[in-house]
Amino acid sequence: MPDREPRRGREWNAAAYHCLSGPQVSWGKKVLAGLRFRGHEVLMDGGCGSGRLTAELLEALSAGRVVGVDLSENMLAAAREHLRPKFGSRVQLVAADLEYLPFEQAFDGIFSTAAFHWVPDQKQLFLSLLHALRPGGWLRAQCGGGSNLARLRQRMDALAATRRFAAWLADFPSPWVYHTAQEAAELLEEVGFREVETNLEPALTVLKNASTYSQFLRNVIVRLHLEQIPDARLRTEFVDELTRQASSDDPPFALDYWRLNLSATRPV
Image (cartoon, rainbow, N blue to C red; front, top):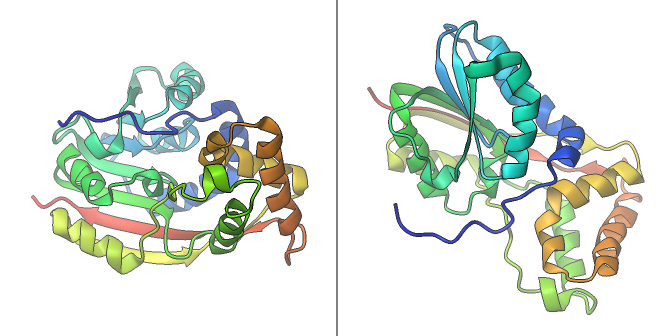
């Protein structure tokens, strides 16, 4: 494994995310609903966050085990508190980068939602996942893709270019990778996955009011952008301006999410 600098922005406000992640959990439950288990599998939840979907995965297994992997120690601490009392030794939580997983042929299946688009090197990500699967093991995942959050990202770019924020954000690279379905399929096949299926689906998400929208932006979407701005007042202004613009949308406080579904198998 090559020497690497720790990934920027690895930490999250886990308590806030646990409360705000309703949209991500609802998408993940739809992915889970399409899975069929024998009951004794050993699975990985890639980018497990605070463990809300890891719990759903464990509930679906009568005697199996789940390893939750996340880069954020804060998220893992929240997941441990959430999961250990009920599931005990059936769940293990590991701090690791999805690009360089410390596993070789360890899992019958890998499940992941709302995580892969945060990983900068997508080819290395898929190669790492392939190596972590046993022969015949499956990958079922969903992440942002295509024109995900296009309207919000355009507003963020315009605001970042203004005099108030340009010094910190004008050259800040996007922290996300949003592939088309075809791009993702080609990468999965290139690293060695087979039975690859990918597709994009819209997932318009409307938040209930300005306060919820603002908190969602601050703790989920623009947290890495805010880390670049040294002044607390300007960080608040950045979020407030995006919230103000969203208040005029129809419907107000809507996020134009697009989800990229990934299904693939490691050859036997």
